[in-house]
Length: 147
Image (cartoon, rainbow, N blue to C red; front, side):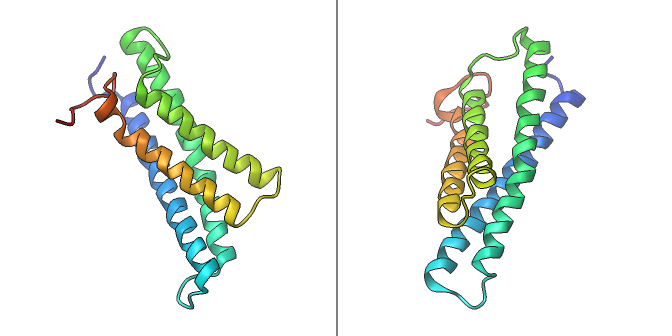
């Protein structure tokens, strides 16, 4: 079950796309905050950077949902359980929830600008923990360790 199956390939590919788009949203948030304070002429406008961050999350959020779904299906095939509260699974779910809060506050509460940028920064910290946490906490996604 741990062999390279199409489901696993899709799971990993979706994760790469999700995390890449979250990196774009993080960069847009950092540049937004710089532009807001310094008004740098060579940067896009703060409004455009805010929009880039939003558009990136609108791609990454459903991709991370797909990662969670495909990973659960694959885990059930491999180990007989859809969810094991593995550190990486749990961190990915938390990350997905942070970006869900971002989309909710932006779409339904009208948050824009600095407040939204702060959530994007928090989201990317969660991405980092999701990506690297398994090296410290083990679990099914532990591919090595930190000595």
